[in-house]
Length: 388
Ligand code: FAD
Image (tube, rainbow, N blue to C red; front, top):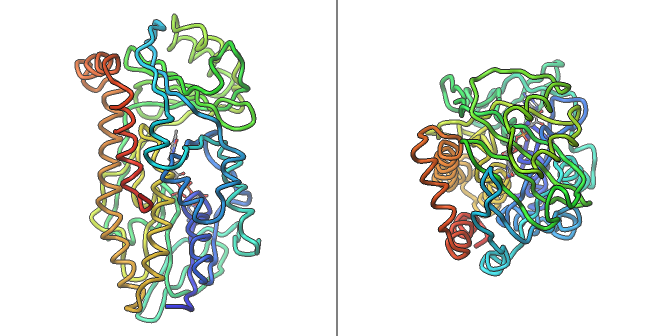
C-alpha cells in the first residue's frame, strides 16, 4: 500500500511520532491539532529506552541525546532520609542496548515538530468534532467548518479523546486514580541532590522525586492521595506542599521553597480501563486515546511511540488493505498496553496507600531489592517493545 493519505488528529507525542513514522514510510500525512500553539501539558517526561529506540529509528537519536538528562542511578529514600536502595542504571542500559532520556516536554515537542521538513504538515486551530467512514475512506469534520478526507484516520487526541467513543461504540469514562500529582522543572543545585541521580523519597503513602533532564535541570514531581477535583491556585501551592511534606528531608524542603509556583502543574491523575477495541474500520486510536495510564511506570508516552512504530510497520508490510493493517495493529498493541496500564495502576495503588499494609510491605521490599531485581524488571518492560 504505497499511496495512502493519512489523517492524524492530535499533535502530542503520539500524533507527531506517528506522523514522522508514516512520512518515513512514504505516506502523505496531515496532522490536525486543536490548540493554536503546541504547548505540552506537564514539565518533564522520562523517555525509557524503548521510546528512545523508536526515536533512533526515526533518525532522531542524536537530538534526543542532546536534550536528555544523564540519569546514571536511581535512589530510593524514606521520608526520614534513610537510604533504601541505590541502583546503578548501567547494567540495564547494557542489557537493553540504549540509555533512557528524561527530557523537558517542551523540548521534546519542539524536537518532534522540527523533524517535519514541511511545517505545513501540522495544522493548528483545527479541532476535530467527528468522523464518518465508508468503504473508500474517512472524512474528518472540524469545529471551524473545514473537512478533509483520507484513506485512514489516527485518533491521537489524548486522554480526553473526543473520538474514542466513536471507535469503541459506547461512552467510556476515565477512572480517577485517587491521587494528585504536582510537577515542574528546577535548576540543579547540590542542595537538591546529585546531578546524575533520580531520587525518589517515599513514605506516608506519598512520594517526592527529582529526575535529571538536559541543560542542568531536575524534573520534579510530588504525589499524594487526595479526593477528586481539588483545585489549588499556583500561588498557594508551595504552602500546600509544605504542609503535605512537612518534616520530609531537607532536599525536599529546598525544592518546595525554590520551585517556581507559576510554572508548576497540579493535576488529578486518571487512567483508562483496557479497551476491548481500539480500531473501527479505517479509524484507529493511538497513545493516551487508546490506553491512558497512571504515570507510575513512566511508559505512557513511550507506548504512544511504540504504537507509532507498529502502526507504520503493519501498513507498510501488507497489501491486504488498510482495515487489515489496522486490525493487526490492534491485535499487536492491545495486550502490551493493557498489561502496562494495569501494572502501572497496581503500582499507583501501592505507592499511594490504597491498602496501607501493602504500602508498608513495599517499603520493606525496597530495602531488600537488588540491582539485578531492578535491572530485570526495567529491562523486561523495555524489551517487550518493538525493538528488542
Ligand atoms: P497528548 O500528549 O495528550 O496529545 C494529544 C493532543 O491532541 C493534544 O495536543 C491535544 O491538544 C490534541 N487534541 C485533543 N483533542 C483534539 C481534537 N478533538 N482535535 C484536534 N486535536 C485534539 N509517559 C512517559 O512515557 N514517561 C513519563 O515519564 C511520563 N510521565 C507522566 C507524568 C504525568 C504527571 C502524566 C499525567 C503523564 C505522564 N506520562 C509519561 C504519560 C504521557 O504524558 C502520555 O502518555 C503522552 O503524553 C500521550 O501522548 P498522546 O499524544 O497520546 O496525547
